[in-house]
Length: 427
Image (tube, rainbow, N blue to C red):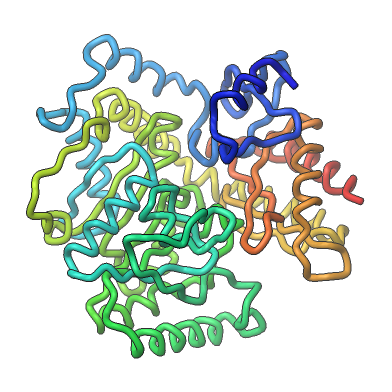
């Protein structure tokens, strides 16, 4: 056990998860690579849990942060803040939500917590619909709408939560259906549920479930849900903490794969926009955002230094078409991994969009999740010089791949080769 690991265990909670049998200390990074305390270089295919969205040490972001820090770092929302207004203007325009207002937080958890505060106040109901296998954060209220047992330490909640079918396409009671029939069955389930309860405040849903193993429904499910929800006055909160900013390649926001019925009522974001700086937020129609009848502030949400980082990062992403790069390079990577998967019975499915890819592992010859195999591949990939993540629903058996969106085709091939070697070593 390293000295730092011993010190970590002595002062931090036991439930604070660490990857690897010999936990890794990352000391610095550049581009798509990071280095550990022993000087070993790794290709980073997880980006601080989808947070280093463009690149490690992106010069445009580090320059913006340095220049802002030399002026002023923080004043709180009690004072006018030019970088916050400028970033809010850009996000409001990009969101697709009409008459949009933006509130900045420090994390995705806090963003989802705020969205539920707004929705329940606006609708005067504390009942919320959520998706099975979902993850929305670690606060008391966001844990209460998380449909993933591995990340939900308590059943106590300020909200009454009911869970809906549809977030996982290839497992569950509707998995055998065609895409159209799957959507129809999930819609009928939603209608039946709404017929038995008082109208809830909102449905909160990730277009692609992140911690749940990068699972998603067929395109159009949430559009079909929205038509039903509108009939009952129920709001739709799109949790875009992991899917936003072009990561899926096909769309800038995950909700756009379900856009037939219009944009969501509320959209939450975080992670990638700050490229490692602590930025989260909520976008909502003005009537929803302005429904609170008490004072509120955010001490650290929207602070000048994080807003400067977000503006520089977003500008770089748009000017360099990183959404297009995610589509092109992500498509190559998915095809490469599927070709490998066809030869390996341990791989049940390679799924995803753009640079948001899941590789689900099972015990060969069965449909049973294999978390031991996932843990072994995680270790072997690290040994080969590749960092990836893991997740999943009933059991943590999905490898999560989400590199910075500047990933090159050569780096995608390099990472795929390392991962193939790790997968072939599973016994």
